[in-house]
Image (tube, helix red, strand yellow):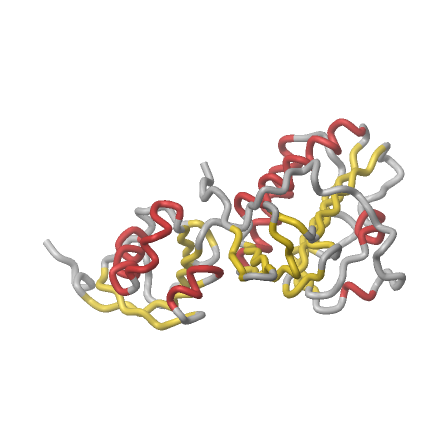
Length: 263
């Protein structure tokens, strides 16, 4: 027996990011679905309307109201849906993102302009910013008397990738979801490792070669836990946090896509 709401139209907002936005040619649109509709139903209807998105195959990701959506999640009127390719991931490993701070701005508070934050305290913090990042200032925010070690990872824009010279990078984020995912990573880091505090700051917008894109700083009573948590955090950030990187070369440009797996 059908309910009174069956076969009624519901209206949602669909957001596109990275290479998916380039394919569709729109940042967002209003979209109508037939109720009841699951996340899988909505995704299929969007792909039917924009078949070029099918080139991503099963790696195309889908979120509902800033959360990764299981296929059976029900879609409601007014929901925000997001469609995007795998997050940037890239070929950079944790060991390739070297610690450094000698070229950062002297004004330790200057980078805090234009900051979006999921938490901003003397303890854990998770932020996006369009301003240059002061690596040393980020590291000092997690230093506490009870800690014996702080490990700070500084990932920055490199000039050569696969034999091609990079002119500059552009980072784009699904900001509210990215902050939620960064905060979730922080919570998981505390569950997995014996650490005191963790901070993650990621820059968006245009970055010149050598400029810092992401800083992760972890303090712990003992150094091993800090090292392990920092390496785990950068790996998970590149796998799950909706931030995309475009590399602009001398002879073209490309969005860097990760593996697309979140299992």
